[in-house]
Length: 181
Ligand SMILES: Cc1cc2nc3c(=O)[nH]c(=O)nc-3n(C[C@H](O)[C@H](O)[C@H](O)COP(=O)(O)O)c2cc1C
Image (cartoon, rainbow, N blue to C red; front, side):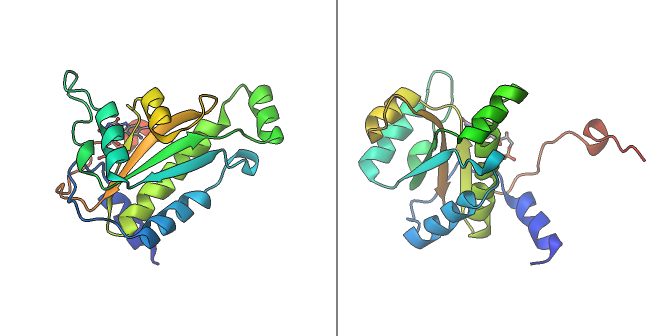
């Protein structure tokens, strides 16, 4: 792959909020999850697990739980044929020590990077995605039988996008970069 192809992938990845109801092949989902599995993490702790929900009843229940008509938030989630529920798992001993010494919570960074891999892999497969942080953690735990000792952090929607490509709204480089030469 040439560098330009990678940058073009980044340009094309966006939060898609309109999906066709075409199902996604399991092998494709497995490849996307593998991209997240291979992502880096502090002390290689890999503090994550993924529940891939394609079951219609369960994904609709999850979608309903994270949508708020009142706040106008996440009302599009019913359409997505795949919900990847991201669970924070315990870090290993070294990462836990690192957290304590550095006063950090490295797991959340690790999971953020894994989600970047996941969403870019989806884009490479010609799929749209949307990371949802506004979710009903308690309801999702109930629906999927996830123990209350674990944190459910995100729901990543995956599906064939029907959302047109938008121009990115971002700060300019000169607002965020300082070169010290
Ligand atoms: C951690 C995180 C949580 C997010 N939560 C939501 C969400 O609950 N609902 C939603 O519609 N978009 C959500 N987004 C998508 C952001 O709104 C989106 O990434 C941002 O506006 C930039 O747009 P783009 O992804 O289309 O480039 C989330 C993104 C991230 C990284």
